[in-house]
Image (tube, rainbow, N blue to C red):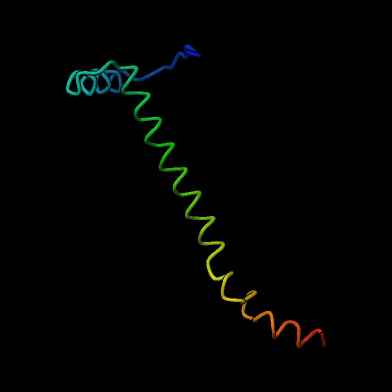
Length: 77
């Protein structure tokens, strides 16, 4: 499905958009689509890296600064 969106752009941005489309021999719509997809991919990668960084170290048996064994020992288990 295709949805029409209307945007308000400054004159300078409109000229930039025209120039990019002309140089790449694509439509202005395609320029906007490509830029949105490119930015979305960057955001997606950043989110995945953040999740990976949050997960990093969890496979070592560490929970904070303590190992599971140390936590169990402190619980008298």
